[in-house]
Length: 103
Image (cartoon, one colour):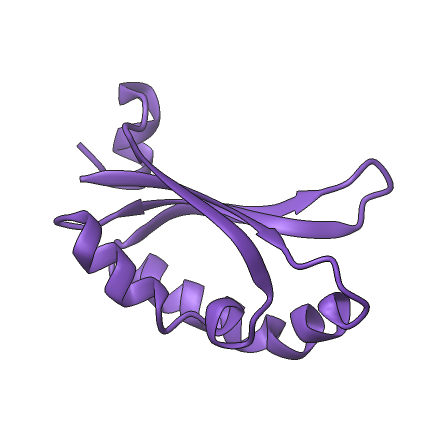
């Protein structure tokens, strides 16, 4: 089952510092998810000036509970980078699916 996660960073004074402190660990975690076929696509959400203000990703997990368990370990969650997170069921279009390894 595929899911679209959209997460916006906190906006307090220390938010960018927390993001940068957790960034390498987050990218390593995401790379592991990609290798295991859990993360199909992902990236940063940018403001009009190109500053990172959030993240989005398309995930493939058996169910929402499995996604939640995995995301609870993400350094952007444990490091309190993301403030607002939404998750929706999602389906990658068929012409992208073969490239992503998804059905």
